[in-house]
Amino acid sequence: MTKNVVACLLTLLLFVSCKEKNSSEKIEETKEQIQPNIVFILADDLGFADLGFTGSDLYQTPNIDKLASQSMYFTKAHSSHPTCQPSRISLITGKTPSRLGAVSHGSLGGVDGSGIDMKPEEITYGDFLQNAGYTTAHIGKWHIGHGDNGPKDRGFDVDIASNEFCCPGSYIYPYKSKVLSEEKTIKSAVPDLESYSPETHLTEALSAEAANFIANQKGNKKPFFLNLWYYAVHTPMEANKDKVEKYKKLITPENKHKHATYAALVEHLDDGVGAVIKALEENGMADNTIIIFMGDNGGELRSGITKNYPLRGGKGMFYEGGTRVPMFVHWPGVVKPGSVNNERVAGWDIYPTLLSMAKVDKSIARNKNLDGADLTPLLKDTNVKLENRQFNWVKYVSLIHYENKTERNWPGRSIIKDEWKLIEYYNMPYDLDRHQFLLFNLAEDPSEKNNLASENKEKLEELIMAMDKWGKDVNAPEYDMEKFYGEVHRASLKK
Image (cartoon, rainbow, N blue to C red; front, side, top):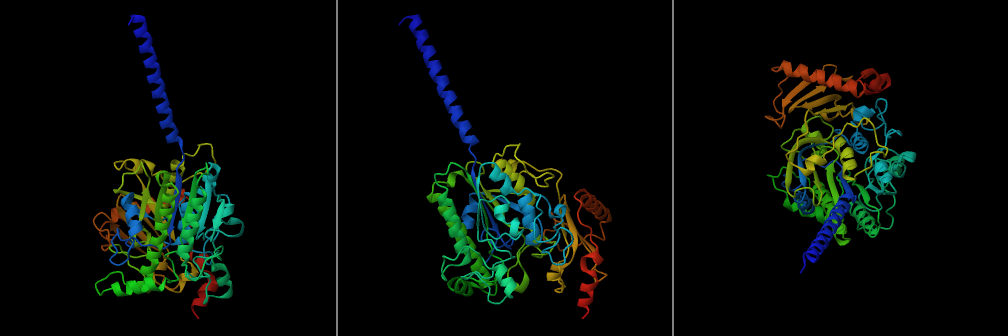
């Protein structure tokens, strides 16, 4: 073989090799550019310890536990607010509820901006994903707007089963209340599910709708985003009788969790998550679908529904039990299965994280002044830290809860900074001596048993100043007892 022939062969081999390499690089580049499908599952009132893998001694959640074992679990995830409505407004806009004036649960007795509707100028994550080429769907509870402020007006192509109330009229078909007033019965009725039967629990019906939506996306060249906001496990406490009877037999005097119907409702939620996973697998979408699972606020303590042990307090409270929620992210090929992240994160982080996950073009309109942080660096590397973060919550009472007079309804604010937490409670018309400070070191006292306010004045003053500065920065509504309650309401309470 002559030198010229050898040279020609080497040149040819080099050309083929380079071409194959370039082709391979293009394939990898194409894979990287593909937008993933995303499913965001939000559970209503699900407590920190309400899952098998988070420590429940009664509730059985095999589907959620298995998915969590394949995900990254955030041990210090917080809701944006101790109650659901402001929490949801924050989730979908990426801003703290206080920046939006949403510091009260419901419109009755709230301050300016804290009514039931999200502000119209806000750009939701549904809007930006829709603009980025996603087919978007919302299924389940909405509770942040109605009329022209419903899901289809806020970035969702599909809207299924969203009513105009805080919760469903009933979990039992036809999903309407038999005990509420006529007005509330109409608002709480869950629409779009007339084709189901008395044997179908509401959570099962929502899961079937989610599975149908997923199946309908097969062959669609566009990625999809499913906003699956379950009504469960919010009241009313209703579940299929066979599940309730199962848990009645399992409860012992030693159990911390003792509510059989709530346990059954949690199991319905778990069945629903299992149905969504099955739909993704059967339609060949599991490997390119991110699943985010989260609760909207702490577990409900009223009527002995649940306990958020070892955390103190529950829904409506500033204690950890009021805002710490289960949260994990399943991201095939990116997140290390079974990984655990101890960084403190919050609901307002979901919005910028979705932006990053979806590879949204920078030119697409999105909210300004986002308060959240992009969590994708943490999801890709457990060693990444988010520096210099502080977390603030503001909650003023709503008159719908006011006469209860329990701590879950006290107005106040709180802050967490460098594992130090400060709660400030404000005065109320019937208790003008209510004002107080509670200071905790969460690293040493995660159950918030020891108030250090009197013995650590320096840290107390530091956190008060930090709360004041933050409030001014986000233009948080200031607490005004006269404005908030008003003479008429206070007079009615004296009767």
